[in-house]
Length: 411
Image (cartoon, rainbow, N blue to C red; front, side, top):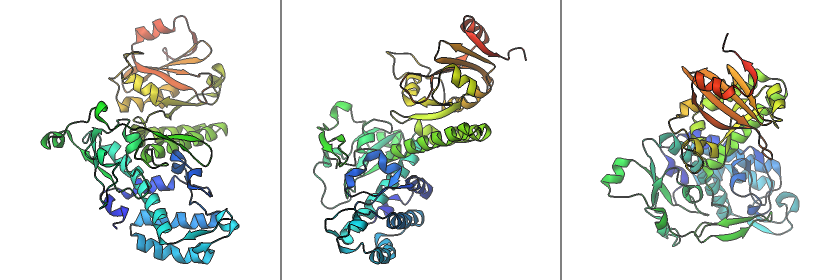
C-alpha cells in the first residue's frame, strides 16, 4: 500500500505544513464525529485519546512526517514506543486515557487510519493552495480514478469529471472522499483539454448527489452527498483558508483593542499582500480582513469592531456574478482589491451616509477610488459593500448632501 506522501511528490511541503500547523488546538474526543468538517482545520484530535500530552506527541510526530517526508512504517516505528509507554496500545480500558469506559483495541490498522487521514487531509489542503496559485494556467480539475485495486462503486461515476477549479462541486467532492479513499485529481490546461478530446462536464450531467442525513455525536445534522463518507464532504483547502482568515481577524482585532494600531495595520497589509488573499477570493461564504476603522469611525456607524471585512458574496457581486442585483465591476483586478487597506486609511474624503455607512474616496495607484463600508444589524463586523474607480466630479456630486467627516482635497 503506497503512502499518501508519494502522491504529493511535486507539492511544496510548506503548503501542507501550514495547513497541518493551523490545527494548533488540541481537542480530546471519544467519537470521531465530535469534530466535523471545518473544525478539523483549526484543531487536532485522535478519537479515544483523552490526554493532551499524548495528543501533543502524536501531533508533533505527524508534523515532522509532513515536514520531512517518510512512510507509515517510519512513523509507526517512531510513535509506537510513546504509545506503549502511555498504555495506549493493544487492548485498552482506561477512562483517564481514552475518555470512555469501553474497551478499545489499538493496533496497526488504527494507526494506519490515523496516519492516512491526517496526512491526506493536510496534503489535500496543500494541493488546494497550489491549485489556486496555478489556476490561471490550469483552469480545470479532472477527477482521477482511485489507485486501489478494488474501486468504490459509488466513486466510479466521478472518474473523468472535468470542471473549473472554482466550481462548487469541488467544495464537497475534492478527494479524499472517505476513509482510505485513494481517488485523485489532475490539473488541466485548456490546451490539454482540447488535445485529449475532453470537455467540461455540464452541471446537468453531474451524478446526482442524493444526500443522506448524518447526525454527528454533537447532535448536529449534516447533508452528506451519496458516495462520500460522513466527515469528508468538505474541501480541506478552503477550510484551512477560512481558519487563517479567522485567526488573522482575531489577531488584528486584539491588536487594535490594545491600542497597537501600527501593528494591526501592518498585519492587515501583510495578509492582504499574501498569496492566500487571491485564494480566499475563490471561497464560498467567507469574509477576509481588508481595512481598519478609527475609533471615531467605529462609533459613528455603531460598528461592532474596528476591523472591516470583504465578504466573498460581495466580491462575486463585484465580479458581475449576480446580474440580477448589480452589473458589478468585473474590470477590477486582485491588485486593485489589495489597495483596500490604504484607501480606507489614507482617504482624502470621508462621508457618512445614514447611521450605518461610511464612504471613502482616495487616490491610490494613480486613480481615484470609492469604497463603501456598512455595518449591518446582526453581522459581527462592518463590511465593504461597494468598491470601484471614481472621478473627482462624481465624488463632489455624491457627497454634496452627506455629512463630510474629512476633506483633504485642498491639502
